[in-house]
Length: 272
Image (tube, rainbow, N blue to C red; front, side, top):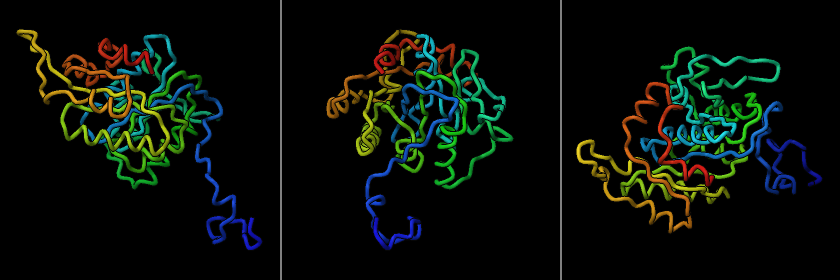
């Protein structure tokens, strides 16, 4: 420590060893909680079905007997409560905010559960959004959880950075669609994970095809798949390709995500 140090890093200009050494930015989990693995579900852009994939992964793990939670970190575009039909405000006690549970026992927390009206927009700047996500980790009573899936906002901005730095993320699942443009955006997400020393656990290519209800032919609505090429480039072996399934979309729209068909993602989920 420098002899001129004022012991206040916010105002002091000295370069003490304590200041220059790498700092542990991880936030402490709520004292009444224990979380096994934290898996972030990311995408480089919106509209690829990231929240749907998060829901399917959570449901798949729950069906295998795991204790599951979902943190909805997409604060400005939350959709997890609607997908699971959870609309009641969470209760609080001396230990913190108690995470509500779905009918199947999946614990969730989302800003939409705390708003006066679900349709109220969240018009906050980045630091407040990031602070909210931290509070979901520190102030929410999650109890005992085997897998926590974090539904991330699209892109590589404040909230994803906060999640990677503040939560002990074990790995990321990258969601994409077949278009060339999305493939380029996916690489940005992969490279961000690399910069944060977070492993990529797998790629999920959503909306890979649509099965014609009349002839049964698989139609690549958005063009040929490129997920295998990107996966090979980055040494990722766990890949899932999900079809456009109106029944899955309908189940999530109606708040019945736990009834959705997860067969297309089961093998992928078991490897996480």
